[in-house]
Length: 307
Image (cartoon, rainbow, N blue to C red; front, side, top):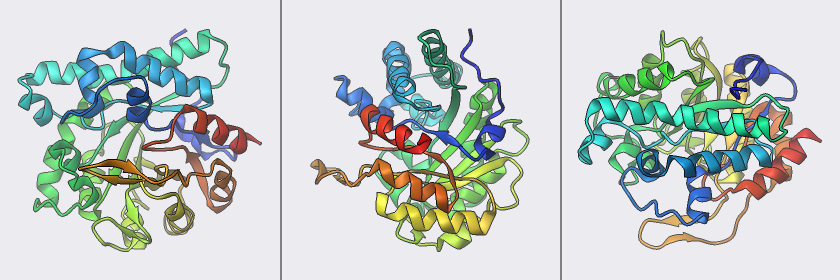
């Protein structure tokens, strides 16, 4: 068995039941003892510990996730070049992120999981490559054309690796969304577009209605929504995305804890797995968790979603 699904991603996503996403990959890796204090973040393990990535994806599949997001969020040609990794090897490592997630799906199916399991190839924003927190601000001082030129080469590599969907995720800025929507044209792989938000606006301050509207007529985009935000911001964003685009909505917030670059995470989790029933009613068809949401919480979420 290859672990590849039988039903195309877009069809499964459009069904009434929708799909369950995994949680924070980095959170699961850190819990297993891996040090991700690196400009490449979890992408460093593509070269150093690919087996750890397979194990992390497998944990989420066994917990009830239907979709695994690859370790390519912070994987870019520029980021690898800073480590002395040439373009050819960088492309191999990015493509391997899809292969590793597919291997986890194969092992899950071999272990008795009978659901279709999907692989989403992650493409983080330009700010993730900078590794300075600017993915939560946007406004990099680059034009839409410059951002498109940055994103297109790695999207081509990821698409060629054969994922079920491209995850254009944690997008802080409508201008970067415009670039990404251009960059995915003609790749032959569906995509979802998810913003990181603060209340009813993108992190860069644009109204969500305007930001979501950019994807309404994009044929490649099969879902629009939010991720890497506070759980309290999800319900309103889901309603807005569904109303503005008419597309299935994706939602996978953080735990609700606060992040300080100098001191780490603080506060308690505000992530309530039972809230997914309300998100579903508002139009969400792809739900999961982001930072600090681990396999046990995804297991609770999957049970609530399927109930």
